[in-house]
Amino acid sequence: MKLISYRDSEGDTVGVVDGNGVINVGRASNVEGQTLRQILANDALDDTRAYAEGRAADSTLDDVTLLPLIPDPEKIICVGLNYASHAAEGGNKLPEFPSLFPRYSNTQVGHGQPMIRPKVSETFDFEGEFAFVIGKTGRHVKKADAYNHVAGYSCYNDGSIREWQRHTTQYLPGKNFVGTGGFGPWLVTTDEIPDPSVLSIQTRLNGEVMQQGTLDDLIFDVPTLVEYISAFTELVPGDVISTGTTSGVGAYRTPPVWMKAGDTIEVEVSQIGVLRNPIIDE
Image (cartoon, rainbow, N blue to C red; front, side):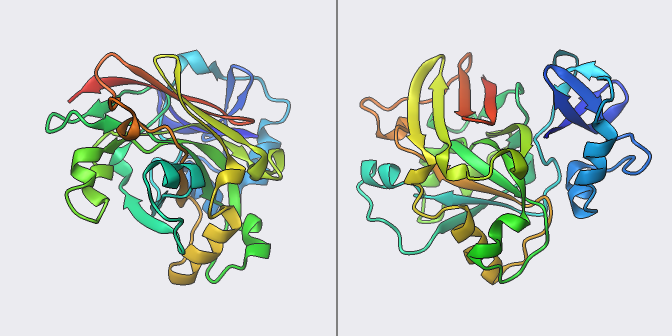
């Protein structure tokens, strides 16, 4: 099942995607008014699937505005230096533990919506990523049980203002400018992707391939991240964990490649889809 958060003429809601059609499930009586995060928290995915089955589409993807997949997460946790190839291109040793940093919800935009290059810097870089969304509350989760706590998968673009990221050893400023991260287009539930390690990822800037890799290059995979993160904080439904980027980022190119107004950036993860965003200036 593919789920989206979107806006139509009646407001913000949740839908199930069927081809190019959208079945509005966010206004079904059992989950009316709930966000996707709330649907997950109420363990209503099966009810949502049952409601959508056999129902005709209410609209098409062309008729709606996609929102960040989880517009209202409690936590967005991103992982740095999590592909061996990316660590190597920056001359970094493989980390012993995951390098984690937070993003704020107002940094995210949905598929098709503009990512914003801030006026204080021109060093706006792309980071195509594979993200997963928590579907079940957990603390001290073991690797063997990790996938039971995952609702599904999506694409992420951890747009980074490199100049500000490197002001200090802390990544926070460079990763949290408003409207710099893309998230979507939809959530593909785990039953459709039993083993995410077989997936591949590609980032394209104006159609030109910038990044290309496979998820078996991850240093810390999904179960490892769930176990590690849940050891220090409680993971709750709707939490977003973006797993890091592969090699080929603009900062390590000669000359560096930065996103600018008029560009289009795409992140594609196999078996999930394409996250596409235009770039505009603040």
